[in-house]
Length: 290
Ligand code: GDP
Image 1 (spheres, rainbow, N blue to C red):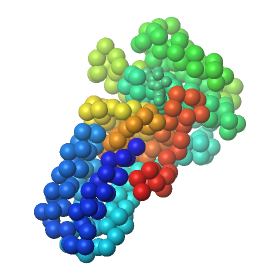
Image 2 (image 1 turned 90 degrees about the horizontal axis):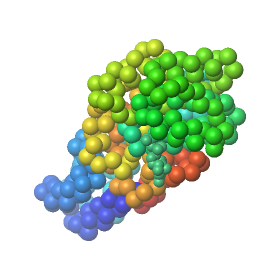
Image 3 (image 1 turned 90 degrees about the vertical axis):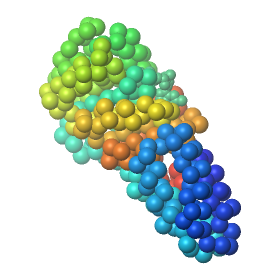
Image 4 (image 1 turned 135 degrees about the vertical axis):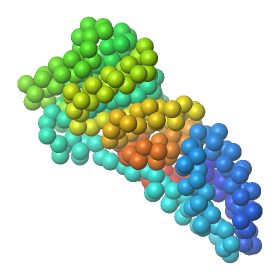
């Protein structure tokens, strides 16, 4: 991830040598970077932040060690965009059962993420039950059941086409009666139409009142990222999981999504195994660049 900044740092450093970088020289070098950032799905807003931080550190300044200034600028960008929230702590501090709603498009890795979180909670001695509230896609319940069996967590489901909110309601009742710590609620990632999906999710929020709402995004998502952010942005997202960061991603989604939604990241998905979930650490992300 973030190879793009490694290359950018080199380009700037080459340009600077021992002379001052003027506004127009800066604009030239940044333009090259901007084209790359756009192709890696960095949103215009995050590109603006990066431009201003770099400009502040580099323009009209004599610098012998440009790497230092570039690092400072990029560190500032990371600090301004990526905040991290610890899900387990949030669960521990909440009234039980803690209701966690998972939303996101089909294929982003929602089901796998739910299984990974159930697995993690189990390791931390917290119990959970999964609500199979994607009743729109018949295969999704089987898929969820497959993962849940592997991690040893119960799934509450009803027949295909059932009311997703009713399934979640049953799951909460089940958790209450068995003193289960968390209810992990899967939802549809697509419906016959978008309005329907949004109505369904809004109803879910109104009736079930989740304590935590997690938007799962695929870090490999291309230009559809902005679309997904704007669709789900109004649903009171409390945090994000960005999946597939083990692939060769440019980091566009990892920086742009939390910035656009003003939302912290809970986890990065780092592979297809159940333990492949990582709390992001800014210092570690920066180590990939410098
Ligand atoms: P859903 O439709 O959103 O529920 O998506 P799934 O959970 O079924 O995941 C879609 C595909 O992405 C599956 O092949 C998963 O194994 C894969 N996947 C999910 N998370 C990750 C991840 O962090 N890294 C990698 N490499 N693959 C992932």
